[in-house]
Amino acid sequence: MKQKLVSDVCKQIGLHPHACRSLFPTDDVLLDAVNDLLVEECAQRLRGGVSAFTPKGDGVILDTWERSFEAWLLSSYTESNFSESPYIARTLPALLEQVSERRS
Image (cartoon, rainbow, N blue to C red; front, side, top):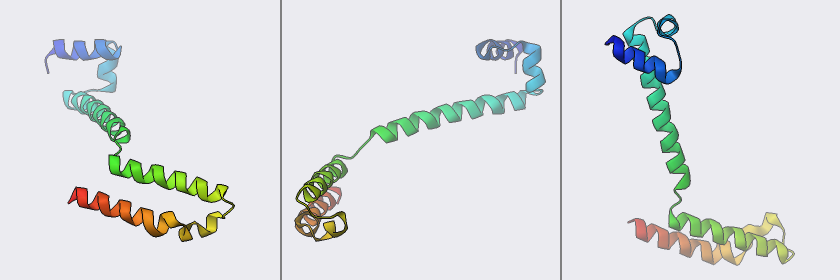
């Protein structure tokens, strides 16, 4: 690596070139550290993008499940017998079928 590039890297991370060379004694070690930072930055961006992405079909299923579950509880039924609800018996299978058809 050229000294100018090392100086630029040191300036960007706020280290004196001598301190930088103490931490990263060879060009390979310095490049590995820079690469690790770039990979981590890319991974963070990817995680942020993935967490913000919710497929529409999945969102519909979750929203209707939550509303149905709340209505079930407000109707004085218990959580333990939600599996007997009309939502689980009829609505959920229909929604899953529609989502599966769209993905095929």
